[in-house]
Length: 403
Ligand SMILES: Cc1cc2nc3c(=O)[nH]c(=O)nc-3n(C[C@H](O)[C@H](O)[C@H](O)COP(=O)(O)O)c2cc1C
Image 1 (cartoon, rainbow, N blue to C red):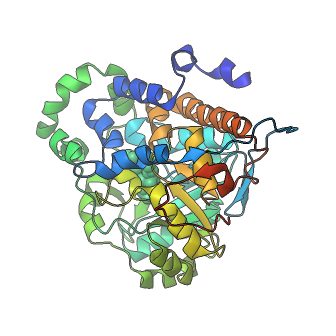
Image 2: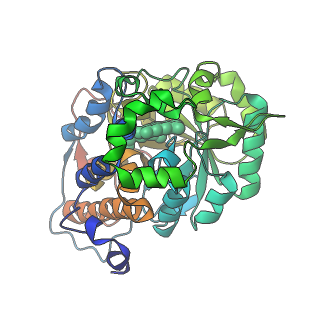
């Protein structure tokens, strides 16, 4: 009830009943170039589409007429208890989508009792994000600034009270996102004014976004990537830097020394890599193809989950992201062995549509969906979900279902 009171009418039911509705709101709020940055994927976007579609291949096996005293959505993940098994995934350039960016998302996650994960490519200082949330906060690492800048960021995150580190391993180079290339994302982020004139028609029709962007001082700097003796890196620097900063398993030696707490290796799609991640000191792996933004043609994340769960064999937590748009998607992933999921675009559409309230609405939609799904399949809690509640295609690797 309290949430309904605080949610602006434009985001309430029946105007917004699902994540697809929030996506439409985001499309109306953002200039085309920024919307496509969020919405798009690599090359032909096969993996992007398949991430969502593959949930259709898994069918529920409900248990009817089961008496359950209540429904418990809590789960333990990365040393924290969360009220819902869905964390907010690291998303770069959030401050471009809404001036409050990471702060608004962290606040909404905290209020909902779950974790927000801040990307390296972020415009608000780590310390401010930590202060904005009443829940656990994670930090996602790219090596774009080099080792010294990364170690400095890890030390800041540790001091500020971040509770988990996510190291993304699927980005040896940025994927080729044709929508960004054609739409001029690079020109939007650059310092030169003349190439930005092409955006004027989009800007005229999106005055609210433009006003927020200008009030915020334009394209933000990367407050958390500070190379020794230099100021924060700029966003446009990052595109080139990504290509020179790919990570190898050897890097985990110094990363582990700099970060003794819970560590997730994000971007694993095979059982072999999951084992390597554990050998490198991971406490969790995140099965992920970066939301279809990196290697197009990579397996849909859900499809890769059972193989990873089997390879991990209970030695680490298994998280998954990619294509989560409904609470029933979350329940299916957990039945197939995930401890929890990360949601990406689902909450970013909310952020674009209405800042903190939009993120809160996205989380509430997913939470209500999860609870309804538990009721419909006759399962009292997230902890009690297992493979017996679903049927996956016969060709899928049979995971142990252990979590
Ligand atoms: C706009 C956008 C930016 C992203 N930036 C990052 C990032 O900076 N670091 C990272 O590890 N993953 C990044 N990701 C990937 C997400 O963390 C996550 O893996 C993906 O969004 C999950 O797929 P979904 O959007 O279908 O939920 C990004 C995804 C999107 C959509």
